[in-house]
Image (cartoon, rainbow, N blue to C red; front, side):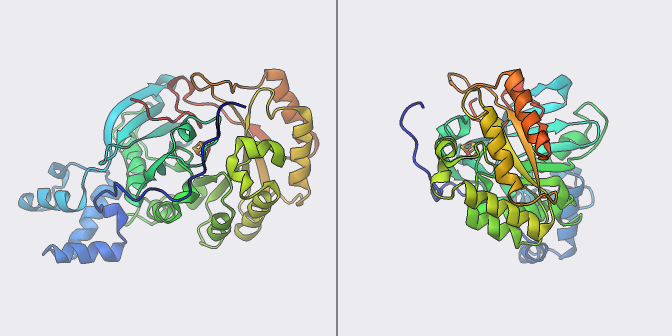
Length: 371
Ligand code: SF4
């Protein structure tokens, strides 16, 4: 395989923390903050409604607040966290990728994907990523820093704002689903990610009122955090990026496997399903001649079926998106079909993910945040 492996980085550098934003606070903290600013507590509800229900960032639109007050409240509680650098669209305008500059100059991306029955926001949770997966553009850049709860939430609010304003074909709407599959390893930034999930699922106007079932948190397999997630009482979908059913190959493709191996991560996924009664998704990027052989399909089926057949798992095969200058490439169609056939024949539910946004580098493993 290519080059020197990058080191695994679990602790993000402590720098570049942005100012506190409304979406970092709990409802009680918001009331306190508003009172500390010399205002009556009911203003907190008004501000939350503007942000979480109306997606209104411009104080000129806050017409239920005295005009002399609006700008100072905006400056105090709604600092600009994400500055748009570039927006690209594909799929007739229904896929929208945005490159953001954070306040310290770090860059991240988010992708809005609208389907007939839902609108999904793929969010970043870290600037860069420390997990060093060799086939992934993000991983090759290393980890710059963790994102805050509000920086994560604001990506979803931006998507809902676009939908609410009718900027995306298909009529007005809002984001129904969120997937933590943009830049970063979500469980390496656990506190901020859980905080964001709570803001997304809190009923309006305190949060976005989304269903936990519409939220997917992905991980390369940080086992202690997977166990912790199972105890949070928020039934999000867990997606485990497995990419190989054997340690020899997974050590290379997903270097964190040297810390927690296939048996341990699959056990943790099984436990998550058992505790939450939510079916776990096993993500498997099909890479030509690397992990797409028939014997690996058989082994994957064996590893999963060994833990029972009670609907606890589903395999999501991802045709790899080529990254520029990379030797990793998508499987041949016939190998992909054979992989699917072998899993199905062994009773493992399997689908092949559609690769929305491929033409704008907006699919998994392609978010490298180049301007
Ligand atoms: S595949 Fe995911 S976990 Fe691995 S380096 Fe890329 S962003 Fe990080």
